[in-house]
Structure formats: C-alpha cells, structure tokens
Length: 151
Image (cartoon, rainbow, N blue to C red):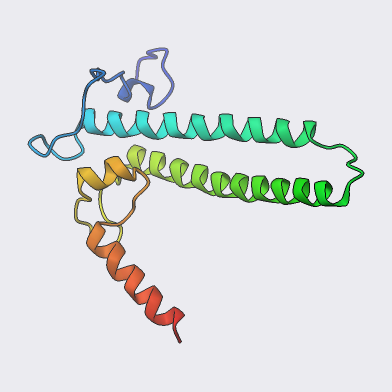
C-alpha cells in the first residue's frame, strides 16, 4: 500500500463541510456525515468549555487558600470549596460521558439506543448529545430504578 503521508484512519476523516447554521433534520438520512460532524463538534465544544471551567476552578481553589481568622468566614469558605469540588467532580464525570459519545461516533454506534438499537430522536440528541437511550427506554429505565429504590 502506498504511503500517503497520513496516519491510519486520517484519510477516512476528511473535513466535513458544515454550514454555521446547520441543524440536523428528520428529512435527511439518520446519522449521515453532516449529522455526525454536527454532534462531534457540539460534543468537542462542550468538552472544551467544561475543561476550561475546570482549569478556572482549580486556579481559584489554589488562589483561595489562605488563613481566615473568623470561624464563620472560614466555615463559609470551606462550604464554598466543597461545593466547587462537587461541581468539579460532576464535570469530570460529564467529560467522561462526552468522551464515550465521541468514541460511539467513531465506532458508528452514535445516535442509536443501547437498549433497543432504535434511533434516538434528533431532538433528544440535540438537547442531550451524550444520550445513550431513546426517551422511551430512558423512561422505562427510570421507572424500574424507582421501583427498586423504593424497596
């Protein structure tokens, strides 16, 4: 095979043109190149925003370490720090879900319910691009979860 100067897979990932105003539509083939590129970019932008917020949070926590003589002020500062750390942990988990969605795009599994194999609605994916289940499957899952939680 001739050397094209591209790494494996790169020749398959030619840049897909996507107009700035593009929105996936029901009247086009499901998960075509443009839809996949739309969701890839949406996920990458979301991931970059979360990582930027994380960097800001880490810097703020490092800068905020100081001795506060007043007990009430110190307690308030500790509560704020704990809240920041919980938020940071949620963001970390969200970044992992975004990475998983990006892998599903690369594997050709994105946009399909992991339970039923049916397409997930474009409206749902646009609102929650990390969705792995159709709305119906998600609702069934949550009902079962609620029933078992009440035991």
